[in-house]
Length: 101
Image (cartoon, rainbow, N blue to C red; front, side, top):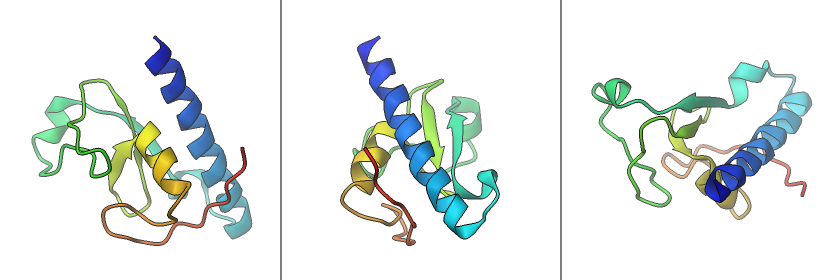
């Protein structure tokens, strides 16, 4: 249960950061970040089914963040990554993010 709460807090932080970026760039909310629930039936068509930050496989019904470039990551992993780098961990596409705690 504690993991779920920390996961939800991290998700809110990522959503908040992306929302602030969206306001500066005047983007639609769905253009910045998408949150989706991982499903093994969806992953059959995809090659990459693990987080390239922590290298762990995604678990059924786990919430993932999908960046504008289409790459997916664990919410907690992406939150930690964005605090030190401002790009997609997989393709290195630049992400405009302002960190506010």
